[in-house]
Length: 391
Image (cartoon, rainbow, N blue to C red):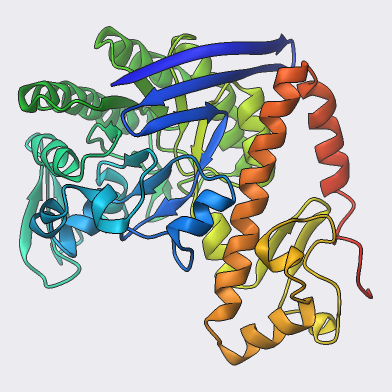
C-alpha cells in the first residue's frame, strides 16, 4: 500500500520544490525525506532507537547483501526485515541491480554476465555461481516485507575502462531495464505483495533517453518512480543536469526518489528539482573516515589542529555527540586509536545533520520560504569550518 499526498509546492523559474506525505504499511513519511542506508540490516554503528530519536522516518535495506548473508530463509523466520533488525517504521529495499553493477563487467574472470534473463555472477562471499533475475529480486524483497520494493534494473555506467558510454549503449541498457520493470511488476502482482513497487528511470547522461524511460514506466502506472544511474562516476555538473531534468518527466501526484545522492548541497538542489526522497551512504561512510558535516562547512576530524580543540563538532547541533559534550579533541583521539565509540558518535552526528536538514527544508516549504532557505544554506556552508574552537 502507498498513498501520496502533495501538500504544497513552491514553483519558481529556479525551483520546483514540493512538500508531501507518504502513507505506507509501516507508517507515515513526511517528504522531502532522507533515508539512512542499512546495507546488512543495520545502519552502521547506530541503534534503531537512536535512529528514531534523531527523526529517521524510513531506512533502507540491501536486497543483494541480505540475500548473500544471512540468507532469505533466516530473515523469513523473523517475519521479514522489520522483525529481524527491530525497526518498526517504514523501510525501502533496493533491487540488487546496483550491487551487481558494482561487481564490474565480465573480463575473463566471469564476475558478471548480463542477458535478457538476468545477471549471472559469482558470489563475492563464497564464489557460488548465481543468477539474479527480476522475478527473484521481487521474491526476495517480498520475503523481506519492505514497504517500498524497487524493480530490478541495470545501472547504466558512465564509463567503462575509461571509455564513455555511448547513446546506443545507454539506450540498450535503458530498454533492458524497461523490460525488466514489466517483469518485476508481473511478479510483484503474482505474489500479491501488499506493499508498493517503484520503477527506476535509466538512460545514462542522455536527456532524451531519460524522458523515454520515464514515459514507459509511467505507462505501467506504478505507485512511485526513482531516478537511477546517477552518482556513478560522472562529473557533478552532469549529475546535476540529469537531476534537474528527469523529475519533471514524472507524474506530479506520485513520489520521486533520487537514488544514491548525495552531499548536503545535492539534497537541497534535489529538492529544488522536485525530488521527494533521497538515500546515500555518505553520512555514515564519511563519519567512519573522520569527515563530518556541519551547518558551516565540513570538518576533517583527523586534522592535527583538532587534537586539543575543546569545542563540540558543531556548537549549534543537538545530536547526542554535540549536546553530550564530546569534544573535537576527544573524537580526534578516538579516531586515532581506532576506538569503536568514535565512528558511532560521528555517525550519529552526520545522520542527525542530514535528518535535521530535511526537517528544516520541510518547515521552509510549509512557510513558503524555500528560496530564502536555499540562499541562506549556501551562504552558511560557504563560511567554512563551524565556529566554536581554535582555528
